[in-house]
Amino acid sequence: MAFVGDLRDFALPEILQVLVHGKRTGEVELRCSVDHTDIEGMIVIARGRVIHAEQVGAESALEAFWGLIALKEGHFAFESVEFTAITSPVTIDRTLDSLLLESLSDAPQAS
Image (cartoon, rainbow, N blue to C red):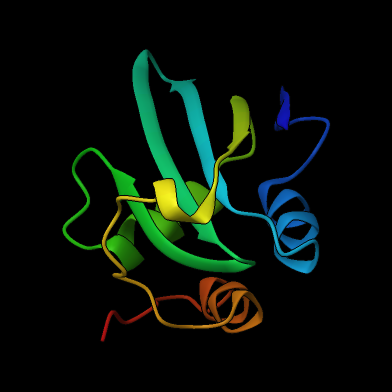
């Protein structure tokens, strides 16, 4: 299953909630251009759990996740894959609700 769209139409937290509640497995790729700076990143979901995130310049998966979740514009593409095809390491071990609540705080702390 492929799912593509614009973050102005579907906010990333909403997209992730649909994928997590649907127990999907795959990668959400994100692309955005802000102030002439290209931002690219990826969030990996395995059986309905966010397990990894990457963003150029981010020092950790959590920092990447919080940077990506803050995007208000850009494009996303979710590509469904078989669970056995996931090659990303598990670098995030929190529920989506916990990640989203923490992203609302002024200064999320990676731990």
